[in-house]
Image (cartoon, rainbow, N blue to C red; front, side, top):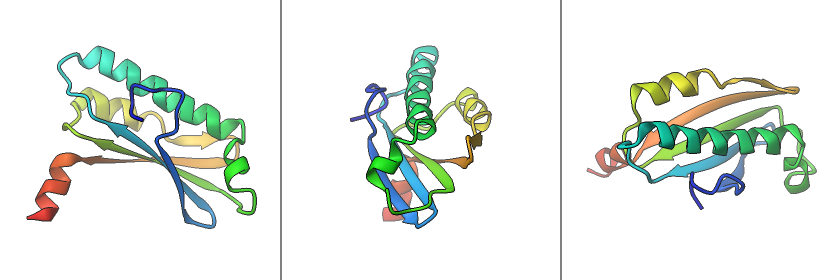
Length: 113
C-alpha cells in the first residue's frame, strides 16, 4: 500500500477516543513533481471521501471521532509546492476537524543516530 494506490487506506488507528490517524506512505521521488502531486491529491481525496462517508464508523463504531489526522510519511523530502498544497487541505470535513502531519525518512534517520 502506498500513495500510488488511491483507493486503499494505508493504515488507520486511534490516537485517543476522539482522534483518528490515517497513514499515507509515499516512497516516490520528486523528479516528476506534477505527476507525484496528482497521485498525492488522489490519495488525499480518497481519504476525505472515506471520512465524509462515515466509513470509519465501520471500524470504530464505539468511538466519537472529532479530529482526524492524515499522517504522511515521505521517503524523500517534499518540494515547496507540496507543502503549499498540503497547507490548503486542513479544515473541516462535515463535523470533523482535519489536520496533516508530514514526516520524512530523513527525520527518522537523524533520530536513529
